[in-house]
Length: 557
Image (cartoon, rainbow, N blue to C red; front, top):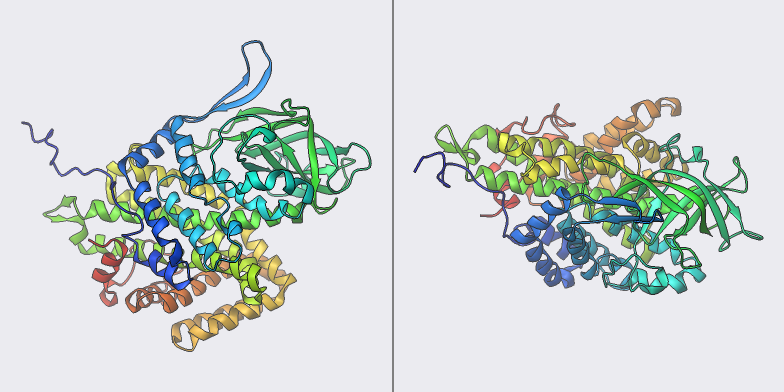
């Protein structure tokens, strides 16, 4: 047999058939620390199912066979349907039937519920990411709709349901429903105040009243959702903005006037449908008050931003695991890649970045729970300030990290069949959706200008770690000095501020929660190193880092 056709010719497949939780000590530690161990058995079962070759194959199929739009039926009638590959439905069913859409709200007294949910989301995101888009938006709308008595009485059971119902029928006929979002328009993008979609009341108007919407949305995520929350102007083109619940089917059990114009041909997130739509006398119900449309939808976006952080952390974890597994098998220049000093530096840096992202994600999830349960000012500061900060940093690091993971595979990583190629294409989406990097940095500044006590609460939190670690103390002092810049200068240095804020937060978290060999390496490479502030992956001084233990922790043999 030719050596070029032998299956052992130094070629190795992507890692499949493993338990995603059992090989992740940091995640298991997070569950124990946040009193979420009660969910570990269920998460372990989920992790086993996700790690099978069959589930990875479903993810590949769902992203290769992308959604198809059918605007008209055979007789020219508007139907606005989107056809998904069966793999999409299997994956989405898998997530919903685990109870992950509603878990944080279904167990309001259960300590650790937000961490348990975050862990399930994180595990799913390591295998397939597009299905998390409708799941994220549906979960994020629950606290908003709970404040609308009439809507909640009609929708609550269907939103909280763990059943999967893929039928395109009126909400009244469904066992469970999905909710999407529609904010951006072509002329405004992130500047939602530039929206021109018009909503005119039927009758007196006001909260809970029905309006008729006409206009356009440039990005309408998951267009087959049973309803969307939409921002539109009320009464006139320069009128106040409101937030509207716009169902896919109207009150007369006919399709609502939401016409899908096209599906976006995206770089990644291929399994999920994103669309452009026109409203043609579409029915919508005002939620919240007129003139409060942006604060209402931003509350929903705050939850979705948390999911963006978790999703990017999941992508980083998957890329790290795949790169390490491959490097342990592939040989070059007489040794396995994982035995070669420079590759070991790269893999160790991937592991550090991934674990720090996990700790930050789990701390955020914990803050969301604490904010609801106790109204803790520190939890509010983490939720309000650190959510956009983490979204800025972690989502951007996922783009760089997946690129480095591809290099571990070389050309094998650059072909579309590779898992890391899909991760690389997927990585930018979380950095762009729900507010790009600049928007996140400006949101951090906006939050701090409105809630100055939030920065003080965070600094006091970080000071506890600073007392034990001089390098953290120095970084805290330098960050404090940056924040004393005149207000007219802060915007220009906002990316620098937010980057240092997140790195400091991560350093404090790994110092508290990770083994010393992890925290020492992270602090040395991120806070104490001149290249640590976003330097190239693997450009670290490996002489003072316990690389053996870092690699074994990231993916135990």
